[in-house]
Amino acid sequence: MNIIITTSQVPFVRGGNEALVDGLRDALAERGHRVDVVALPYRWYPHHELVKSMAAWRLLDLSESNGVPVDLVIATKFPSYLSVHPNRALWLVHQHRQAYDWYGTPLSDFANTTEDRRVRKMVQQADRLGIGGTPASHRFAISRNVAGRLQRYNGFTAQPLYPPLAHDRWQVGDYGDYIVFVNRLDAAKRPALLLDALEQVPEAKAVVAGSGPLLESLRKRVADGPLQGRVSLPGYVSEERKIELLANARAVYYAPVDEDYGFSTLEGMASARPIVTTDDAGGVLEFVRDGANGLVSPPDVIALAANIRRLYAETELAATLGQQGLADYRAADISWDKVIAALLG
Image (tube, rainbow, N blue to C red; front, side):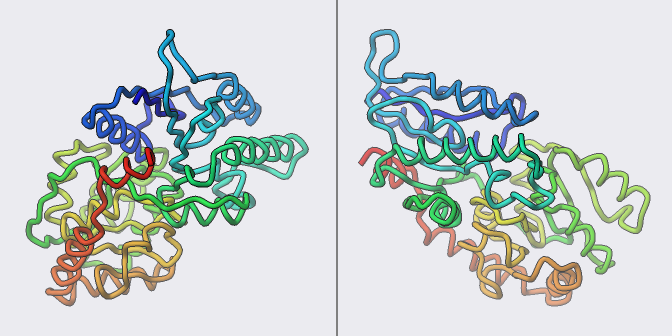
C-alpha cells in the first residue's frame, strides 16, 4: 500500500509523538509498504495560530501525490486528522489538551476571554469534523486514557492501541542508590514534585535528566538548597546513557498529570525498575499496580516521600517490584505486528 502518516511537529522538539511516528513509519516500511510522513510545523501561540494550523491541514488533499494514489492516511495528533482523504485511520496521540481537560487549570494557556473562548470553540468544532469524519472502526487511541477523554469530551469511541517502545536494548543491572527521571522537564511532568519529596528523604539521591523549560530553574534550586550533591540534572542524555541510567537505578519516578500514555513507564518496566507514580498519572496507571510492580501515592509530597523512603529502607523491595514489572511488560505483548494489523485492518 501507499501510506501517508500525518503529524504536527514543533520544530526542534522531539518526544513521544515523534518516536511513535518514526516507529510506525519504519515498521510499515519493513513490511513492504511504501510510506512517508507529512508533518506541518505547529504553533499554539498566540492562539489565532491554532486557527491557521487547522486551516492548513484542512487544505491538504492527500488522496494522491505526483500522480501516485495514496491508499491510506494514518493521522496522529491534533490537528493532523483534518486533512482530506477518503480512507483515513486515526491513531490518536492526543487532542489540544489546553482546550479540554487542562482548561481552567494552570496547565492551560486559555483564559476566559472572548478571543480565547472563540478559538477553543473552533478547536472543538475541528475535532468533531476531523475525528468524527473517521469511521469508528478506524479510530484508535494510544491508551484507554486518551480514548476515555475522547468519549468524555467529544462523544466519539476509539479502540486503545498501545505503541511499542523504540527498541529492545533495555538492560537489567543492579539496584543502585538513585531514583531516575528521564523526560521533558515541564510542569505537566512534575519533576519539581520529586524534588519536593526528596527533601523529606535525606538518604535518597536522584538523576533528573531531560531538557525543557524548567531545567534552569531546577538546577538553580538544587545548587542553592538542601539537594545539592544529591540530585544531578545533566540535561538531555543520549539513548545509550538513558539505557544505562535506567538499568542501574533504584526506581523510576514518573508522575505526570493525567498522562496520555507515557513511554517512560514501559522503559522502566523493560529495565526491571519499579515505577514510583501518583494516583492521578493517567495512562501510567494502565500498567503500574501499587505494591505489585510499583508504588502509587496521591500527588502529595509526604505520601510520595514515604514511598521513596520505603525503597531505601526495604532493600529487596525494588528488585521484587522491578522483576514483576519486567514480567508484566513482557506479558503485555505490545508489538508493531498488532498495531499494523489494527490500523490496516
